[in-house]
Length: 214
Image (tube, rainbow, N blue to C red; front, side, top):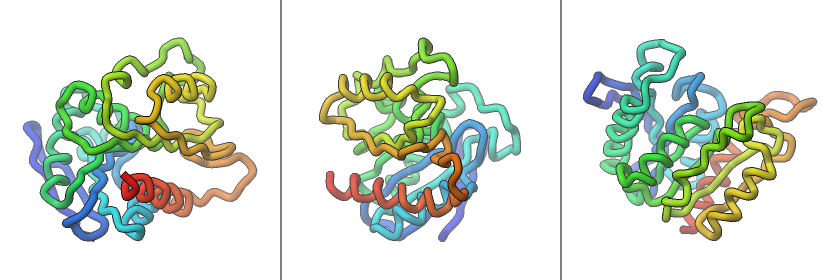
């Protein structure tokens, strides 16, 4: 599992590669409150690699520095662009995705033409802030023309289920939804033992099948 550093215009960020290069790869960003190193994303990357899809995970600049508050959007985009360029050196076709904020930033860049990804992978998309479904974050999605897979818990407070289904219905065949019954924003299910690594691995296998079928 090679680890390395990637240069960005505002400093270096850490990255780790799962699986061999030369074939399909998913460049995967973490969510707002974490880093690339957490049990769910560890499992997700391992599940992808076991199914034949390489994965490159990376830190944003703020998480690299040990800060909790996310960078401004331009810095998030710079880190994404640098990591994706490195991913394309490792494998093709190169997909982009991420947990929550990481996936949302990737989708905005694809919509703007700033990221030439073969497809998008959303690991818990933050469709709106918790308790504020009127502040829906879907305007840019109509401009995306690549395949998209949404891995989403139906008890996720960041994505009211009927709103999510409405968005995906509007996007049509470009978007597919994988529902995790009872899953929250971290895909944990109330009343069941917590196994973030195992949950991530299972979701990684789902993601790999979607990528390999395209």
